[in-house]
Length: 398
Ligand code: APR
Ligand code: PHB
Image (cartoon, rainbow, N blue to C red):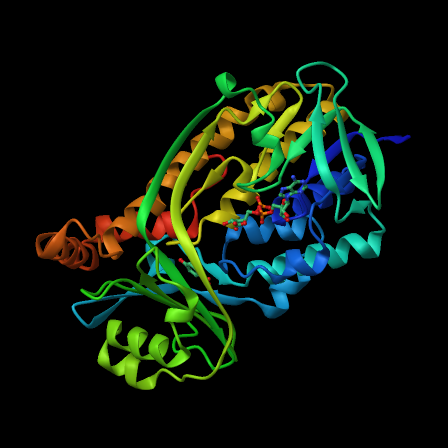
């Protein structure tokens, strides 16, 4: 027995991409259903980056979920670069004609979107097993899945693959129809969440040191998110809280190291660093968005912002299709999204390369990074390039 239903857009994945797309489609009066493999608690348990570009904040407002970021976000006007044990502020707002970023966690964005969805009673199938995509190269695609032992078939006009890097959507595309570009970095980030006031609440701190990269971020005025670069094969058990605090302090400037408050970790995780792009992002009536199509290393926090850009282009394309009888947006979706993605890939790769210790590049590599950082903090041209990418290039950059 198979239970059959119909919607206009089937969205695979209830991460930030799928949830934001759902909210924007609903606002435009387009029917959709989200099908998610995990439970809501599992989705909310994932801790990821927390810097939002203005474009992303605007999109949350457009989707009707801007209240959380308005009340819980912290506006940042600068960033701090540490190298050779010295801290240098970069006046991001001054260099970008007044632009800012907002510190607000992806977990919080996801929670706001989930609450909004359940208040509106929008359909989400959690814990859907064996999700399969069918006939997206023809006019009548569908998605099948099993929920509570019952097999379901959801007929639709379009499928949005918002199911992350390990999802089923990209994997359903024939191998010869897709090209993948990838770089895996030879190190990981160890992240710690702790209920201590952030050492820097007005700016994210990015530290280059000959012991490796370190980053100081925040989730609120009482919750900090910190990272250190570590070897990819390190295990979480290798890193006691004490070892983490000792190590991050050694990578910062002395004043900040002294001032940093420490406490027990409430979450600790290791993340490998990867750059990845799949081209194209449309296959007939299937679209990929967010991590399903691309990954950036977390340096610069572009992942969620890129996902938001994809969702903006995709929702506009679908709205044009249904409301204006035009497929121009659908036809241009992949090209528009990829232009933005490659720019952010370049920025994330550049900042990663500038700030981390690469095992193969040795003392010469370290000196080159220090020379570039020294040039960066003294050159208006280079610091403007950093700042304009950090706040995010406009959606219509070209
Ligand atoms: N069927 C249904 N759902 C699936 C499947 C599947 N086969 N595979 C994965 N999913 C779900 C995952 O459980 C997850 O909830 O798809 C969702 C994808 O969410 P994310 O991985 O968060 O991806 P995305 O929504 O594109 O968010 C991009 O996440 O990794 C960060 O840096 C990235 O901030 C960016 C953001
Ligand atoms: C984070 O808050 O987790 C964060 C902030 C800035 C980054 C990366 C991660 O560049």
